[in-house]
Image 1 (cartoon, one colour):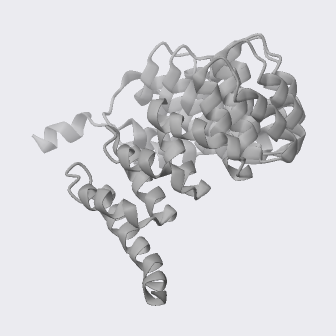
Image 2: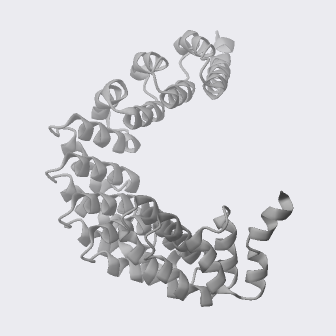
Image 3: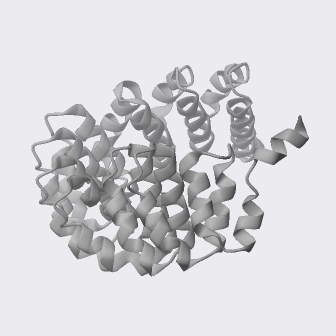
Length: 335
């Protein structure tokens, strides 16, 4: 059987050595091998001559063919692949759009100008992918174009631009993000609060304090978490409420934030959160209790050692108990 099988299996390495790009593309289109990754690697190794056939393959009706073509174009990292990858951001399959974005990100600063131009493309998915890629690349040249994108008519594009500005963390974005806290959509206001918390500029504090009174609780929670670095006393109640009432991501961040605040008023809320249904919330809570260093947390942390779902939670509980014991030793010596 292995001998018979080898008669019908294409010799990809032989095609690669002979530079037979058309043969490799034929194998790709016809699925003549179950290991299309080998075809992709072979096409990448042949360099820029592969680009034209790969661009043509982006129009193939077969999703798997387009997927390999996008990954290969990204792997080539050639300026000639930038335009086709940007066009692939509007593919009907989200996974191919995602791979195209990754390919652009891997090309780094070389693609920034093209991505900035793509922010005003008529296609929503291209604008969305461009904003996301710019956030991953984190080049300050993208800041002003991303700020202009905050006026995009599509809320998903506005959200991606806000996320990118939060990732780049340039102070020029503070006032535009403050204005975004007035956006009619809750998720945009929530994203803007997060981004201001990432930038950590004093000029953003007043905007975030105003958002503590937002009509939506999720926005209030995000604003409170974004203010943790300021040690603003008014945020404690909101962060505690976020730990108790927020979604999973908010609860995780709130647990971490309460440890950073070093305020013993958070003790009851944190000990209760040790029983949260989400293991990452429990993990962040054990860490926060260790940072807080209050001996009253010892009994709840000892109970957390029985957490059967995840040994990482147990390990963190042991580390926090050890930290609390170390903190208590000087006080006991003084007595």
